[in-house]
Image (cartoon, rainbow, N blue to C red; front, side, top):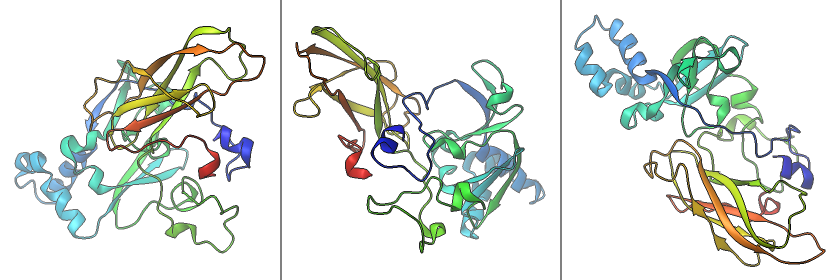
Length: 277
């Protein structure tokens, strides 16, 4: 978003850069199991263990119109995800998490309980959870129904006259990559060099390729994929690190380093942000 703001201000002026992402090891219980257990409480405990194996009551709830799971945090933030995420294999790996990296959740990361929805935009991973409910509707509030985390075309510079509630809310993240070395506006010596970064795509789609250019996209080299590339291609919840060997030309002019990632569904990251903003 920081690069987009350099072209034209976005609706949110918060200039997220390459550091607005991380990865961690979480421990908790599957949200699908918790909801199934609670539904069985309303059904006089019939077939509880069998139900947990197939999430039968949760599936039945969707057939009755319960299409969303709403979360509310202690600070008042509300967000939701589609129930179908929980009906994926392994409950979509959606957790009610109480540990992070082998320790109790730190306060800033949601102690005592938070939602972890892998493959989905961070705002749906509600911290300090106080309420969870099934609903026919998305969660209320600007973070779900307003202009926050909605997608608009490059020609849309304002939302006057637009019913933002009818614009689909962002859930799965699009494929993207970022350069972490060298940093922007760094002086680098001519000759052999290494460009490093990470790539990620939502929905569990693994990264299959990252291309790197040091001439603004005129020519490209394929990066070597590192940590994270061993994840299952359709259950890849963490980032993939990459690095690319390049030959930096001897020039007094600035060079433009560009990267673009391709995920397991062969979605390709745009070369530049100008075309999408």
